[in-house]
Length: 328
Ligand code: CUA
Image (cartoon, rainbow, N blue to C red; front, side, top):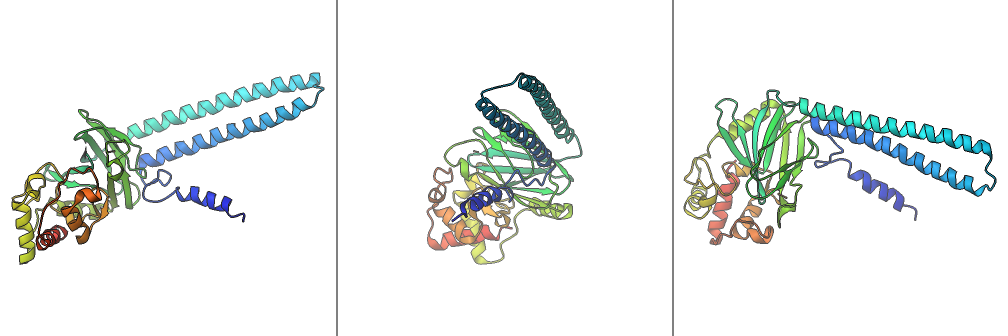
């Protein structure tokens, strides 16, 4: 009978963690902002409770018809204390905001990993500057970061305004056509997180997610080296047929698979698509069935997507999906 308050509190607390929560910081910027949020919550919550207590006291006092002269004096003293408390509280908040702002700015200029993120309707193009060669290595819809190393993200819009936000790692920053916005972030805890476009950008704004993986520096370096490599040669006839379909069909007009004749630039780079956690910017788990479903009828899974449906015989669709799944 009396379970609903418990369920209500549990429901609220359930939102305090997980892979997409600003209340569970795993990055330098998110930690600073989380601390500031906590301070503001305590100061403002304290003022709110004091205000309510004062209100209750005032109501009770007004009911006592005979207010004494001594009461007036206490009221003045109370108001003076109250004024001091409010000024002190606001000063604490202003100072803390300034300090956090400076700390966020101080993260800049360190030896940072260069990453270029381009927001499109409705997916993310992600390119890493190879520290060794200086070349850009392109992937999509996933952000990999080495733990403890600063990263400088250059945010570019491919079409309309989007907003880049990984709540566990940092604050959000809008991605605006014609501008180059810089976001510095340092992940401090290994794990998998989720970013989400945070500015309405059209029909599939909600299905514009970014899978984030924070790993040890050595694992990250291995991953980046693997991403830099071109696609391997297919080992059997079905995979080879899948590659031929990709190269000779409409796929190649929009997608690149490095090491093949597919050099399109409109859509995500698919060179190592099989190794990603999800497809279509976090829309579906990455497996052969979903890849095939996506190829033959993307609009059914993500209405409004710019990816056109491919008319393929079942065997061809299967071979193409097998090839994409194999591209790791
Ligand atoms: Cu992109 Cu909302």
